[in-house]
Amino acid sequence: MDWWGGLVAVAGGLLLLWGVLLLLLWRARPPDLTVREALRLLPDLVRLVRRLAADRALPRGVRARLWLLLGYLLLPVDLVPDIVPVLGYADDVVVVALALRSVVRAAGAPALQRAWPGRPAGLAVVRRLAGLGET
Image 1 (cartoon, rainbow, N blue to C red):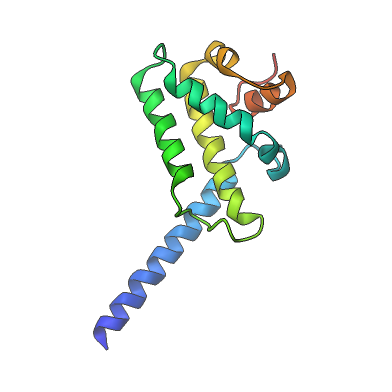
Image 2 (cartoon, rainbow, N blue to C red):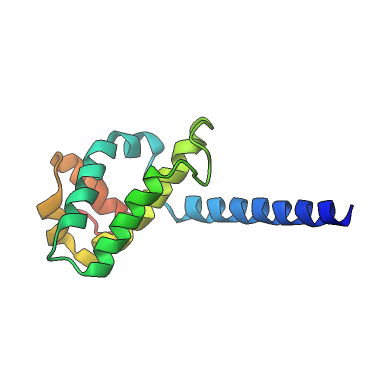
């Protein structure tokens, strides 16, 4: 019975840690970013991440963060499973927002401008997401 108690304690601790991490990720998102707005940008964001990851002018650490982001998005295991309505994709949106914020601040606005494949309105959203403000 002692073995089961330890297993339950570890599972409970992991569940609590998962909840705290999800809460921190959600609180760190830009306040004006809605899930719907972020999902509309998804195809352009994927192309942006791919273009930035392949840009040899960027530091290796910045490109490594982008490859890690792509790896996270491709993994079948998420913080919140994608089958959970709304929240399943919300954790992906928050992780992408945090990673892009870090990468764009390190790479700079010119790299973002050069690599952006979408419309100017989408670029404005990404700039806000990255904390760069409007142009």
